[in-house]
Amino acid sequence: MKRTIKNIFAVAVVVLLSAGVAGLTTYTIMQNNAEKDSSVVSFNEQFQQNPNVKLAAFTATEAQPVDLTVAAENTVHAVVHIKSTQLSKTKTIRQAPDIFDYFFGDGSARERQIQTQPRVGFGSGVIISKDGYIVTNNHVIEGADEISVILNDNHEYAGRVIGSDPNTDLALVKIEGKDFPTIPVGDSDKLKIGEWVLAVGNPFNLTSTVTAGIVSAKARSLGAYNGGIESFIQTDAAINQGNSGGALVNAKGELVGINAVLASPTGAYAGYGFAIPTSIMTKVVSDLKQYGTVQRVILGIRGGNISGANMPEDAKEKRKELGVVDGVYVDEVIEGGSAEAAGVKANDVITELNGKTVKSFADLQEELSRHRPGDKIKIKVVREKKEKTLEVTLKNEQGTTKVVKPTGMEILGAAFQDVSEDLRKQLRLPYGVQVTGVDKGKMADAGVRKGFIILKANNKEVKTVEDLEAIFNAAVKSPEQDQVLFLSGIFPSGKRANYAIDLVQE
Image 1 (cartoon, rainbow, N blue to C red):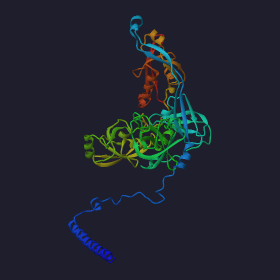
Image 2 (spheres, rainbow, N blue to C red):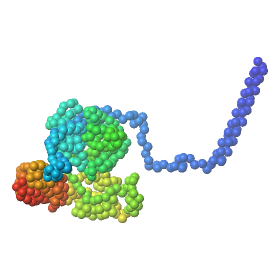
Image 3 (tube, one colour):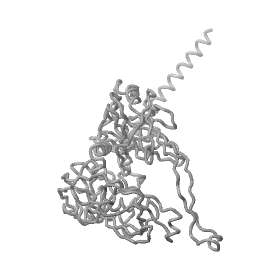
Image 4 (cartoon, rainbow, N blue to C red):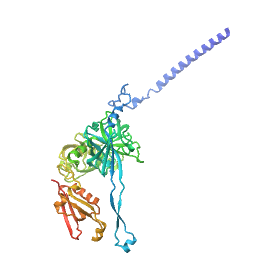
C-alpha cells in the first residue's frame, strides 16, 4: 500500500514537471514565431472593404420567412382564365401543277378548298377595373373569333377585344358586369433585384395557380417580339404555358407585371420567366381604351448598347474613345425625326432620359413607351467626352405630334377575298384579290367599285388578302405625305383600272 502511494506520487511529480517543461517550450516557440512573423498582414489589412457598403438588416423579426399568403389570397380572385377560339373556316389553297397539267391543262397551279379545324388556346388575364376591363397578352387573344373569360369563382363571361398592341404583346379585353375583384397596380420601377414576387395564372389549364420566386433582373431584352418594345422583369417564379397574361405581384399583393414569356430549351419552365412591367402596361392599356390604338413615339435613331458581356473588341475601343461606360450609342440619326430636330448627332451616347439613367436600349424603350406624341423630354448625351442636355419634342411614326387614330383595314370600307380559280383562269391571271363589296370609306371615296381585282398595291404583287393587309399597314405608318395606297388591276369585263386611295385621317 505504501509502495503504491509512493508510485502515484512519483508519477504526479513527473506529469507536473513535463507540463511545466511543455508550457515553457510552447511559450518559447510562440515568442520566437511572433518575432519571426512580425511581417504577416491580416486578411482585413490585405483586403480593405468599402466603408460605404451596407449589410442587409438581420434582426430577429426581419429574419422571419416572408408571408405571401395574403398577397396570394387577394390576387387569385382577380386573375382570370381566358379561352380563345378560332372557328372553322373555308380556306383556299394552291397546289403546284403536276406533269399532267402541262399536257392536258393550262399548266397553271391548281386550287382546292379545305375546311380548317377549330383552334382553341388558353391563357390568363388580370382584372384591372371593377367594371370588367382585363389586361392580357396579345398572343393569347390574337386571331380569336370567340373569347371566353372564366373567373376564379367559375362564373363565365363572353369577352370582347377593346384593342391590342403586338409591339408590346398587350391587349385589353372587356366583360360586362360590375363590382369585379381587382388587383391594385403597383410601381414596377420600385422593384428591387432579389425582391419576392408571385406569378399567378392558369398553367396547363390548372386554374388559380400561384408560384413564388424573386426578381432576378430588370430591363431584359430577348428579341422575342421581332423589333417590338421589350424591357422585361426576369423572375425565377415558375411561368409555364397558360401563365401568359397572368399577374406578377409583389409581397404586398400589388400588380407589378404581366407574365408574358418563358425561356426554355424544352418549352416548359427551366428557371427563367419574363413579365412586362406595369410602367409599360399602364400606358398601353390607357391608350387602347381612350384612343383605340397606342400613341407611340419614335425618337428617330439607330444604335445599340455601348456595353455588354459580349461586346466586340472594336466596340470596347469605341467606348474608351467616347469616355463612357453605359448608355445607348447613336449610330445614325433619322432624317425628320425627333432626335434630329433636338440636335442629337451620330456618335452621341444617350446616358439619361428625363432624369432616369439609360444603361441599355431596353431602358430607353421602356422610358419612351410612357410618352405620347407632343410630349417634351430632356435627354442627356455624351459628345466628345462632354455631357450635353437636349430638349426633345417627341413625334409619332408619321413624324407629327398629332393623336394617331386606329388604322385598320376597316377604314377602306370594303370587303376582299382571293380571286376564285374559275375567274382567274377566265382572265388568265396568275393571282389577285377581288373587292367583293364597297361601303362608305376610303375605297368608295376613290371610286373603287365592287368586282375590281387588285393585282398590285404600291407596286407590289397582291396574291392574297394578307399581302394587301401588309402593304396597307406599311402605308399607314409612313409620313403623312406617303400615306397613299396605289392600286392597279382589272375588272371581270377585262377593263383595266388604277386608283389612288388617300389613307390620311382627318
